[in-house]
Image (cartoon, rainbow, N blue to C red; front, side):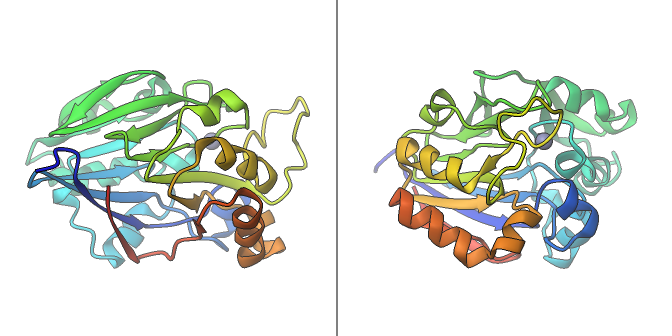
Length: 262
Ligand SMILES: [Zn+2]
């Protein structure tokens, strides 16, 4: 038996990101639910429960009690807002002390002590760490973002999540040759690029092309999509990234269960 065979299911609760998408909900926000089956051990991981995670999670019939780990990359509202209510849904408001909260320093600080006591595990991580949830290994990666504690993730050397970051060759190199890369691309063309401002530190479609030429995943899933991409056109943006990078790229549908064998 090939030890590395993992069945992964990726379900998007939202696909939007950035201030404008979050506040208008013209592109719904809410996070990503991953289910892994590795050697018959099932692990549920919910990443970045932003605005809408709980309500849309209910609508999508997410079984919150099957989430083993809530992973929070950083303390921006579009990534963390619904964490407290998700913790209550995962633990029957603390009556069933189970599961874990894993987050960067500022993310964990944002969560109340009451909510932390509902859980079995609370862990603060930094970039370049590795830890396990059940039999699944999770590595944290470096990002360049306004929230300095932010990290990305790589699950079992197969599935990557870039989280929010600006582009640099060394950032892309962390995700080389994965099966799936979930890439946070907020703009078609980032108007704040290379400007010294405290916002807009995100990839645009041009950065995504350079990123993918280096990382070369089998599939790229676009996530954290901002209003600038809605205005340019979802399909036009996807085509631009796919045609210029040569990497199979999709914009996921909210609520659809994408199944992969890695
Ligand atoms: Zn952010």
